[in-house]
Image (cartoon, rainbow, N blue to C red; front, side, top):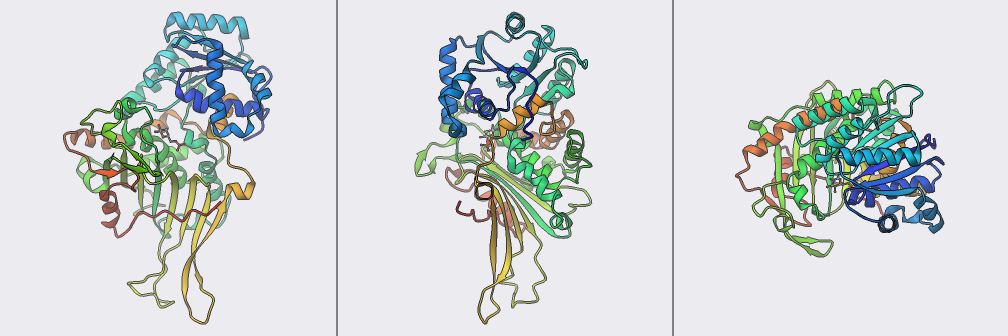
Amino acid sequence: MSGKVPDPFTLVIFGASGDLTRRKLIPAVYGLFADGLLPDGFRLVGYARTEKNQDAFLEELREGVQASARADSWDPQTWHAFAKRIRYQHGGYDADGFRILAKSLEQTHGPGNLLFDLATPPVAFAPIAEGLHDTGLVHPETPDAPWSRIIVEKPFGHDLASARELNRTLRRTFSETRTFRIDHYLGKETVQNLLVLRFANAIFEPVWNQKYVDHVQITVSETIGVEGRGGYYDQTGALRDILQNHMMHLLCLVAMEPPIALDAHAIRDEKVKLLRALRPIPQKCFAENVVRAQYAAGAVGGERVPGYRDEAGVAPGSVTETYVALKTFVDNWRWAGVPFYLRTGKRLAARITDVAIHFKPVPQVLFGADADHPLKPNQLGIRIQPNEGISLQFQTKVPGPAMEVRPYQMDFGYASAFGREPPDAYERLLLDAALGDSTLFIRADEVEAAWEFVEPLLEACEHEKDKALPTYAAGSWGPAEADQLMEADGRKWELMKRPVR
Ligand code: BG6
C-alpha cells in the first residue's frame, strides 16, 4: 500500500447488518485504522434496513474483527477509539430513508467527502445509486467541492444486459471516475505481483508467448460449500460467481500485453483488449470445451458434508453448477494456439488458487529421454493463495556418475521472504477508493467485456437446463469429465507441490 492517508471522509456502508460487512469490510477498515492509514476526520455510518441498537451493532462488528485475519492487530484500546467513529442508522433504500440519512450526515459530519459502499443484495444497487443522487448526496464534480464515490460490490449484473443497465444507472448518477466496481481478487497481493513478475523482470517476458508456452492452467478451488447462501448461489452458479469475475481478472493479468503505464487507464485498456481477444465458445462447441458439475455428498477435511441439492435454499432438482472447467484461447499474436484451461469449484479437496504456466518440452534428443519417459517440461507456478508465492520447476542432474536428470522445484514464499502474510485485499481496495485510485477496480467496458465472453456459456447452460449435471464427491478434485477435457488434449490438471512454510 502507498502509505498515503486520504482526506477526511465518511464511509457509509449500505447493508451494514450483513455478512460481508462483519466478515470483510469492518475488519479491513479496522486494520487500516490500526495501521494509522485513516485520517483524523474519518467517520463510518453503518446503514441497513434491520432495526438494531448501536451497542448490538458494535458488538457484532467487534466479534467480526476478532474472528478475522486481522485478529493479530486486535487491541482493546484501538478498538475503543475506532468504535467511537462508528454510528448505526437504520432505514430503507427509499426516498424517505435517504432524506433522513442526508440530514443526519449533514448534522454530524457537515458537507464532507462521502464514500458509499454497497454491501447489499445486488437488486438494491441501482435504487441506492439513484436515491443518493436524487437526495443530493452526490456532490458536484468541481475541483473545490467535496467528493462522493461509490463502491459497488459484486456480482455486477446477472448477465450482459443487466450489467449494461447497471452501468447506465451509474453513469447517470455518479460518473465513471467516481464508480469503484470491486473484485476483491484484484486487491490480493499475489494478483498484483503478477504484474511485477512479468514486467519488472527481464527473464520471463521473452518466453511468455506461444513460442515457449505450451498451455496455461488457472485453478480456483474452494473447500467451502454455499455457506448459508444457498438461495443466492442457486441463482448464480460457478460461472457467474467466480469465472466471470475473479478468473477473468487472473487471466487478464497473466496474458495481457505490457501496459504503457501503471495507471488505471493503461492497465484497464490492456485488460479490455485481452478480454476482447478471448475466443468465444458458441453453443455448438460447448460440450467439447466446457464441463459443469455439482457436488454430491462427501467428506471435506474429515467431515461429512451434504450434497449441493441438499443444502438449505437450493432447489431439489437444481441444475446450477458448483464446478466449471473450460478451455479457451486468446486469439492474438502472442498467444495464438495456446490453450488456457480454467477450473473452479466448491467443496473440492483443497483451498487453492494457482496459475501454472506450462512451458513447451525441450527436444527429447539428449539425456536418454525416450517417448515413454520424456523430460518434464518447465513449469512456473504462481500461488495466489494460500501460502502465497512462486515456484519454478526445472531439470537438475542427480549427483553421481550417471547422467540422471530429475525435476526440482525452487520456491519463493511471501511469508518466509517478508516475515509477514500479505495484507487483506479489502484493506488495499477500500484505501484506494478513499484515495480515488481506481487502478484495481473494474471499468464499465471491462465488466461488459467479461460478460460478453460468459454470455454464450450462459445461453448454452440455459439450453441444457433439462439435462442432469455430472456430479463429483465433495472433497474430491472434481468430476471425471474435467479430467477427460484435459486428457483429450494429452494433458492433465496439475498443481505444483506446495512448499512447507
Ligand atoms: C466470492 C464468491 O466472490 O469469492 C464466493 O462469491 C467465494 O462464493 C469467494 O467463496 C472466494 O474468495 P476468496 O478470497 O476466499 O478466494
